[in-house]
Image (tube, rainbow, N blue to C red):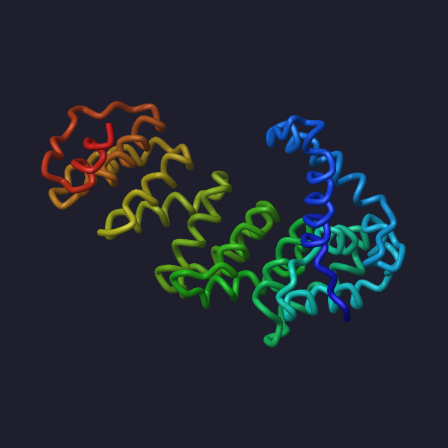
Length: 276
């Protein structure tokens, strides 16, 4: 498959337009920049030699086979050419057929990561719930820095409250990193009563990630957390950034902090003080 670099072609078109019209705009870059959206629309709907006379806007509309377009997407990723938004828009327009074709990428271990991430994004746009089990598994297998797992978590949140039972079922046997991701997902669904208990249990035994857990409790909106938050604020080893998040959570839950702690000497406090 020939993978045309649409970005490069538009940049060449725009550069030529600027060369021809710069004098009309007094060489004012801001004024010419304001013209770019209209120029892009004109380029989209102008027959192009690099597409054998087809318009960029309609080039991918000739294809009705979602599997073929999925393979086109793979070719772009493997050839390291920017994937055109026009190709992605066409896939989304094909609806259920595209969903089936994109699901294939989720279990294709040879697929480039870029293609898998794009597939997650498109399946989310298509409001597909089919990948739920894939996303849970990827989070269970997650590494400390794992873009695929992060996108999977965002996709699960987008699916709505239907994901809660599956997330809860996966929580107990998960690694601490995966549990944190699951808690972050569950925090978007305050009606799940189990979430509050899980976050509270984690906070009482956790020495790290205090700020994350405090923010979750503030988000969940359950005032029963206030006594534990206040107690945690008095831990002698607490750093200033964690303290601030704990204080924010207490205030979000409608309570007051009895007395501010002195954090002079704390590296985070000193660094922020110098910036003010």
